[in-house]
Length: 211
Image (cartoon, rainbow, N blue to C red; front, side):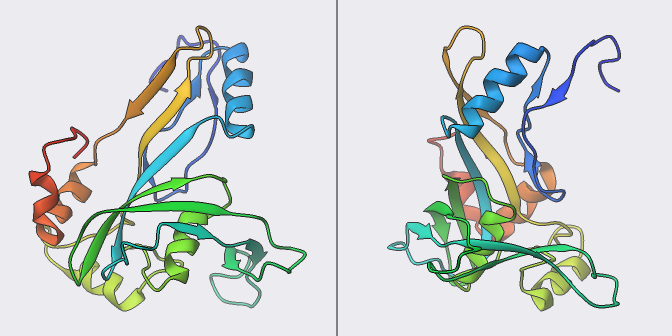
């Protein structure tokens, strides 16, 4: 809609509905194929910013946990929705999934994490972080539902009505020239505003322009 004159626009990859940040769109079929090949062959680097409940252990840097995707049964409003859970390594239905975690700032209440995914499984970051007892703030599928409700009810300055997961940095090669590229997307206003209250020291970190 923003570019009605464009003859070819195709999504290179996807984000979860409630995730903000970088989303690549190809303008040519040749670029689409090249970029999708880079994603498939894991030649790209995708790093997210996630705010989680509690103080993440700094020693916990690698989450190597197989994931299994399933559909909810029942008659309620959630029936038929996709869900993902961690399974044992010997589960034949488990898909290998690796997530790298770096603590950017933390307090006993919240931690801001840089999360890099080595595999692109459905809901991977959300499930991996929640499996360690530190769900993403605002996550309506795998999160702390009581915390989410209290934040949603809070005033505009202190509240949060969405999931705090943001596709922050993407490293790839230009599809035509092969030049290494690093794309950055700063936090949207509602996340940046909440972060100033939850972890005010992060905005004093002047070594990066992303916040």
